[in-house]
Image (cartoon, rainbow, N blue to C red; front, side, top):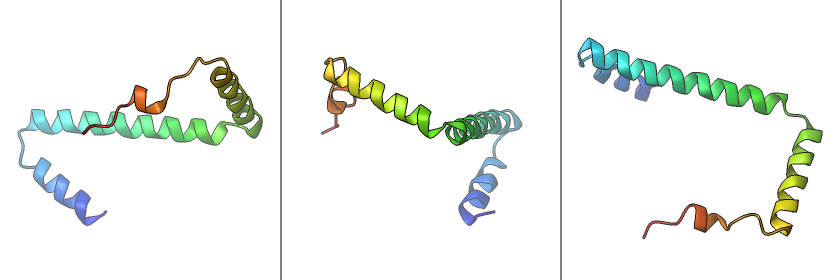
Length: 76
């Protein structure tokens, strides 16, 4: 276990049980979500990536996309 994780756990242990459980639930959900994404990426074939890239290129050519800075504007 890393030092940072040990520090976090130490701080969480100071909290009331209901807050500890709430944090634990969020962490567990995050871990499971990360595992699902990792599995999905590992199962994605080169052919599937190629099809996805082709689809994105088609959407760009048709003007069906927006610049990234419009979707996620930079904060000043």
